[in-house]
Image (tube, rainbow, N blue to C red; front, side, top):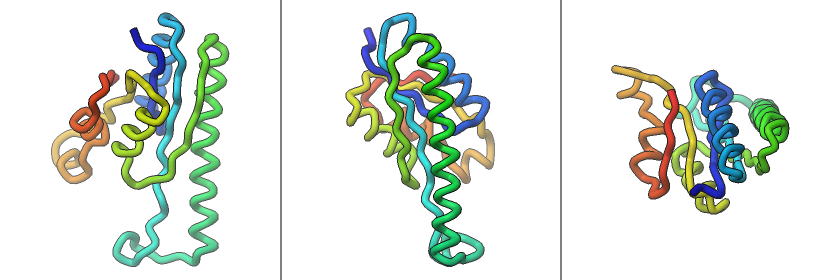
Amino acid sequence: MFERILVATDGSSLSRKAVLSAITLASQIDAELVAVTVVPRYPTSCLEGAVNFSPQDVGQVECAWNDKAQGRLNAVSDMAAAAGVRIKTASLNSDRVAESLIAAAKKHRCDLIVMASHGRTGVQRLLLGSETQDVLSHCALPVLVLR
């Protein structure tokens, strides 16, 4: 059935549910898991952010974001190992979450993507969009969306 499953995590409670479901599925079908988190780049132009910071401050913020992302991936890796699931992890720096997830799935030759629906509705969804919807719209692979 599925040999390699990509699971997207952002540390939210919904993505933790997706991670647990992906680990369970991978365990049941003896699939390898690829856990991915996407870390945004810090806005550097005055049009992107409200306040401009020095390159050193931006570097510190991005380093903290990367450390937090690595902590999330380490936690997923520990859970997968405890369940006997083979796992690879990847932290991607990009402002294009959906594109990055699809590219990672292709790079790691995944045949399923598991991700959470973030649950935005109404105006918030209209203004902010949906990374899950973008993955569903642009990916040729099966996508399992969990709420």
